[in-house]
Amino acid sequence: MEKKQLDWANIGFNYIQTEQRYVSNYKDGAWDKGGLTTEANVVINECAGVLQYSQSCFEGLKAHTQVNGDIVMFRPDVNAQRMVDSAKRLEIPPFPPERFLEAVDAVVKANAEYVPPYGSGASLYIRPYIFGSNPVIGVKPADEFQFRVFVTPVGPYFKGGAKPITIKISDFDRAAPRGTGNVKAGLNYAMSLHAVVAAHDEGFAENLYLDCATRTKVEETGGANIIFITKDGKLVTPKSESILPSITKRSIFYVAENILGIEIEERDVYLSEVKDFAECGLCGTAAVICPVGKIYDHGTDICFPAGMEKMGEVTQKLYDTLTGIQMGTIGAPEGWIRKVC
Image (tube, rainbow, N blue to C red; front, side):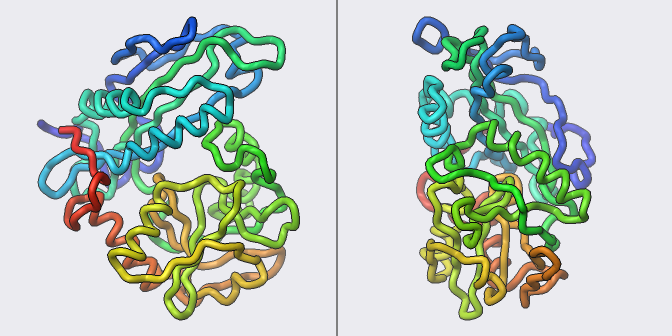
């Protein structure tokens, strides 16, 4: 099978319309059979629940071309379960995990020519999502929903790829305790848009949010979890009920502890101690691991010894191991790789 003739090295993290996507509708208490369609546009009523009260959730995962030519996905079963958790929190009927896997399989296979070639540095981003589709004017959950999956080839999430970025401490709050910060709700991201635009206007790549109760503890950025490496080589990450449980971070934990022999610690991370870490990185499906060289805190730069030129040594080992598993150059833990074709 020939790949599409795209400039794979320079496509950026942007939407490129592909040939087919998956659609299933929920009505009268059940999801219909669903199937592939070439229609990329969504037509809904002006009073649809998603438009009035933002009742929606989504997932993000990737397909890769491995070194042997296989097209695979990385841990899609975990995405399927996280989407169930998000749906339940938002009063959305969960899409069955086994059908989730069948749907993403079908869409990736139908658009296989858009999966970037091995070694290109690009991947096929997979976006499953559910939204309330019937008219809702009173504040209540919708009665009908649509589940869709589309794919688009993408390059690195941050400009410059794996080059260290500078982020800033945000004056805004991302999520409240006992709120929806730990589910992948569209409304969480809408709330972050003003803050991220302001950060970009000021020359920063992202915002780092603190806990809204005390504003003394680090939580996560607008689109990724954060990890730190101590000067003695330990992996530390914030623990909070309002942080989205990143599948990439969970995978990094396993890689660190079971493959690289790195001690891990998930705990409260106070802003006051960030200056004492040796390395810092953002992790998520889109970014994988992006090194952070500097954090700007209201006139003060927190600079990490790893610097602004390249990933720190430990972060690089984590990145190389995780991407090696995804690309098939390193053996994967059981169940992590799902072959599509």
